[in-house]
Length: 342
Image 1: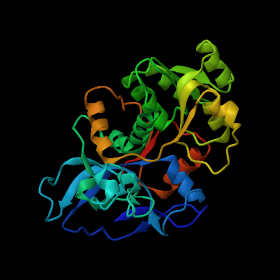
Image 2: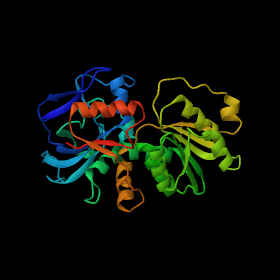
Image 3: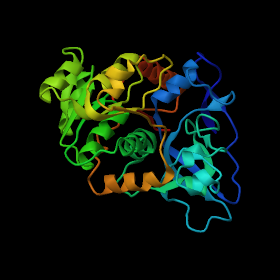
Image 4: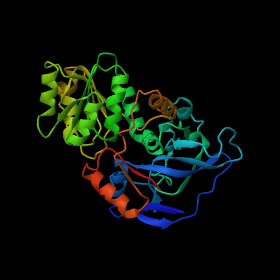
């Protein structure tokens, strides 16, 4: 089969011919119909977040059709449409049993530690399968598995309650889901901060107050529109030192700041001014949990999360097209989400 693979840090991904994966009795083989290109994939190529080995097939936002089912899998049939939870775990340790499977000591992420979805087929344990209703296209189902799931988990960590005011810094793939989910959680007002006017227009269509950081200081603008109080929750989804500082500075008393974006620079804090004086909480959010994914699918099915605008571009399974998409992500361009459609 064809697979586009990571072959080394700061090197272009390459198309390779590799064997179709074999499955064990507890696995399924999935024909990939859609694979999202996430900013994390650009981080892997750049070396910001090391992969386990090379060559490696990237791609952790994956949806497709069941093509083969292991002999020990009783309740999944060939031809079903599915999306895939990207953390392959043991399924029985304390972390898995307590619902915090992202911290399983044996966890391996598809497209990061083991081969992922930039390919024609992928094999995963059957417990990683999330059924997709017919009304959810594969491209949108793929983005649910990371962009929406990471946003949902971050908002759960933020403990949003009815009447809260929320700032989402970054209106890309994660941010667009976070904007909608924050309203579902009861947020009274959601501010979307970005530099890209097209993304801000989509954010506004989801009910956000859009703030273009090219035109105004986002902290000052949020403070102005909240009567000087600031927001209750700020979620940083870009991974920049500047937006991290903005997230900390735009919350008011008892504010919660959730950091999602990945970067490798230290953040300086004046502990009294930034945290202690207003009892501000600084919260890290990592990945998501398997059991959260079925809820996300239900949100889409029931109209509480609109993924129709989540995919702004589709490309074929070709190395040049994928490398160009990764280049654009490094410059924070290329719309909301680019998805590979083999």
